Amino acid sequence: MWKISPRYPDGKLMPEVSPGPIGKNGAADRNEQAYNFRPVLTNDPANRLPWTKPAGYNPRTFNLLAKYLQEWPAKMHREPNLDDVTNPVAIPNHKADFNNNGAFSTDCTGHSKEYPNGSYSERRKTWASHLLYTKSFFCFLASDPRVPESLRDEVNTWGRPKDEFQDTDHWPNQLYIREGRRMVGEVHCADNV
Image (cartoon, rainbow, N blue to C red; front, side, top):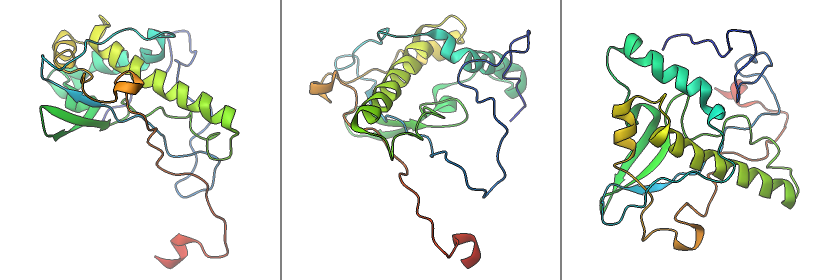
């Protein structure tokens, strides 16, 4: 991949970019592997719901993704497609399980660290922010004019299935938590490799 500046021309960081330095590989920190929601989507027009703008949607959240997608054709010599920003895994009945793929995808990066030790209230906030991010990510890809038209069109061939997750507005009812509390002990995994 190519390097892309996370800054605006005035030097300010774009949204969703951490100002801190990147830690050393293997060094301890308080961060958690990013969580996400893994939507089940369908490309069956008879079962597909259209993308809608969620309450709280802010397209600025995706300014760096917009920049990345706009630079894509010059760097990759083709237009970006849905597989470049998500990982759809086919399941029966014209559906797919969509997961994270790449630097800009369904992972709500940098917003998971309070969850493992958080109160129920803090966990509800984390849950809500991740769900809003996921809804906003797909809304952005489906509708923002900064997204190449071919990618917007492809995203709009998919949608939430009418027959899945009916009690949660057709979004998954589980947050995909990849890791939680870490244990500290006398033996380090790296020492046993």
